[in-house]
Image 1: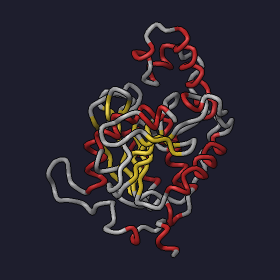
Image 2: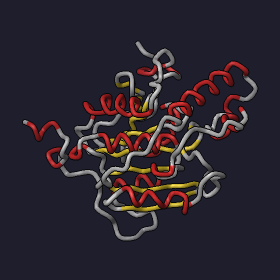
Image 3: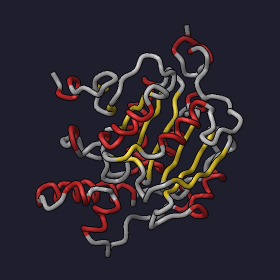
Length: 281
């Protein structure tokens, strides 16, 4: 049996769903599924603290990217658009409940393009983009002059790897693979999403600030929000749950500041969800 299936998490056991997803805290009654897209060089395990913090508000499904961790033997697509297609194919059988997307940095761009590629009736109710410029601002890959230390720092791995040379080599290989895929991205203007979109940036992010992410509003016609939260460039990771409080309030409709509640994203019954299998019966 897989070690993943046996690892206790306090609220269930970590579960791998096919090749593409890790469910750190399986739930039976949260009513909302949050698909989480990792940053360049990141892996699904980075979202375990977030899954713990969101239990029982949402069940986190973290994307297991190719060419790392348990999928090291699975090649990463060379083209960004092929990666989008592969993720859409993997996601589609699991959209029978209300769901949203959370992505940070490279993962935010991937989450947006996956949302655009899904059928209109099956798009996420919520898209949260963290530490990322809007898609119209993405061009090319990382600057060639970036040092190895910079790449590791931007991926949030430097303090985890320490001085282990082999771990360092593997981490850099993964980061560079993802950045090569990102470099193939070309923005294609598309109709704004009707999804609710919330852009987030860390107060201490050395790369971005609130004005840099405000352009996300142009890519949705649904509700838009922007929040500056404590933290640096990568908000969620193996040692931090990220903006869990904000995500919880967006999903439940309960304001963190105690203001008037918004409409929750979870319907009363599965029949209300447009992608629910019950609607086709």
